[in-house]
Image 1 (cartoon, rainbow, N blue to C red):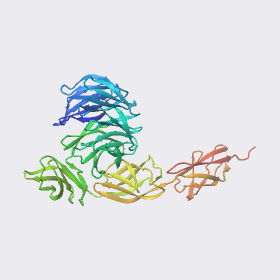
Image 2: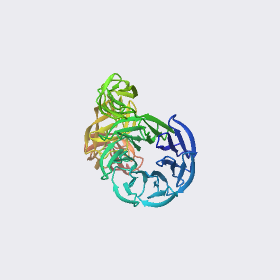
Image 3: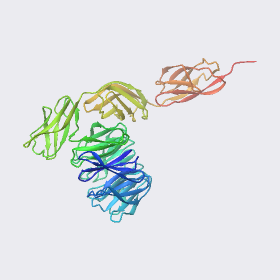
Image 4: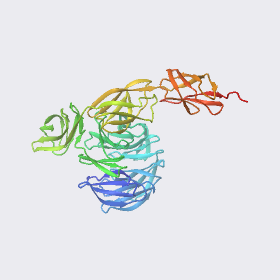
Length: 527
């Protein structure tokens, strides 16, 4: 099926899932969480954007270069609108009069008049336009272009007024309900940029896991949820502190994400698994340390003037209270416990909270890497690692690739300089250190001496240079040679036999690079 994006109707009664693999739209009844209709589309549907009254949907059909108009009452496509190459996302203005459509293989955004279902304008934005959102007042559209940043469009003139530089490879966007904050997922840097829309300035960057996809803001504006496609998790970001407070495991390859209008649950499209996960958002975060102390938001109905919130039998401290949400301080505890709220109307259970034990680290491999960072995976082993939120090598955040209870794989980012640094893992249960990762600078080879020897091998040579302390292998013409590390500037090696005379490359392989020198094999006397 390869489901991609998911969109909820304004009343939350239905969810629309674009299935790129089967060229269909699945319609889900959110009351029963069952598929009630399957709508055939053109090739490569990406997303359904709904108008403000929910009666019309606009389906981006990437491979066909179309936007198809969906009648949600009959679940039929009523017309097709040709747009640019590879349309990805669409956003409808708050008054429903226009649709802005990004084209990832083109350099423009198409503007559709919904009264006539025709393209009335194109706006140059640059290569790689993907995500698009429109402010609640309809005056601006934000477009994530992975080649240039986030373009800001004045919808009155349909012109780009400014460009916001975010993280590496920005692709998708979400606005807070009041439009004051824009959240941008950056695939290349595994971050979420936080933009103040009053100034269009980036005010913070929040680290998430690898391959961040759709973000979504909860209706109470307390959290941002981000689907992380590679480690199969959803990050929960606290909007007050701009920190990730939890990673929730979902299905394989999460991409699309939408929060129900009542804020009690969210739908996550698992592209690789071909499923949709439903996660409760009534208690966020729903994991924390056994010592307590975390700030937790409890969402529901009729919560005004709550007199008590309990995690199991332990009472939490209430710090804020409205009719639909409570902010509390998590008490100490253990295990999985119900979260209950008591008001004048009685006591109700709103969710479950999971106390997480402190993680432990037992090993790291490899434990050496380049100052410039690396795409090679590094494996950390230990206990209680599930739901890992952050991994740091010194002050440099490593990007989480995969997580289980006993293992985390990460990729190291750049470091300020060479040297050993502590490894820190942060989970909902707390932070732990105990291992060391060593950043090393690039190595060089300046001399091989002696640089000649017989084809029979056996010549002991001294290789001099810099950064040789972590040499892993020495080869002569690709043939491994016995070697010994003398110092950071010297390695000795014994030349292996060669089948022919001539000059060959001597390569020193380490965790950073493979500098080379040369050695000449000389044939023995003969008749």
